[in-house]
Image (cartoon, helix red, strand yellow):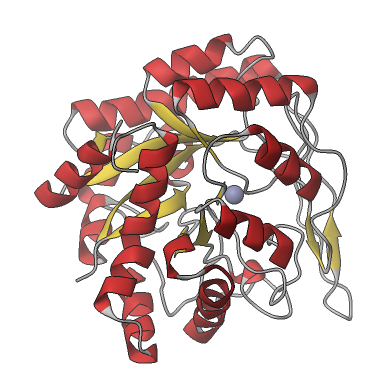
Length: 352
Ligand code: ZN
């Protein structure tokens, strides 16, 4: 089995929301449940050995727009969030991540050595990620605190604007060039992440923001869960120019399993064949080379193809890639080695 280190999941969001309903998040992850996508038993069954686990503040009032007759839709950006309640939620999610680590249910990893070690031991290798930095103020004080708690990756912005950057809406068809990029404090955030060794994720940022980060950061460029705009022209996907810049930086794109970002018609529909995932992988590999393509499932955060189903079905994608002719050494890169190389680089580790 090819073990997978995956670039994006929202399992902390699910555990947090169930905890608010009185469930025990530790037991839920350890013992498994029948809904959602990731828990320890299903991760083990599907060779999902670890991944970037997002702290994400939900936009409660966001309603996804219905497609028109042509299948076109534009969901307006969610409203900006207040910082104080966002910080409360981020603290609660980080606490779940820390408790899972303390109880030995998963390992909260701070280095690539940590990730490899827990993969070998069969313990889920979690990296704390923040998807949209509403919990962090312009003074970046909370960045220091979350770093101390294990934060090693962040996307400055989700699909709503904040003090750091502007996000792209969920829209089809639409260019990712939908507005301004980083703010002044957004540039400060990028520089501080470079100093601390926190990976910067370009998923959800506008194209202008992408180029702002590209000219500021000394890290490889990374989009943890995005696909090819040429195949599925949603604003969340990456143009060929963006893919070329990622390749030149020796960065990585994690394939997003969200059906709305895989299908040619941009619709969200679980009845989407695995072939749509393969088309995107092939395209990304052709454009960027085998060293820059990885996985970023969006498990627990998206409608994914029913042929995958959940984390337990992850190896069906790997089997399909093998059938297409991908050799084991290439599959190892897509499944984990490209992510581990980029993390080592962003974290300032030797051998990157
Ligand atoms: Zn996302």
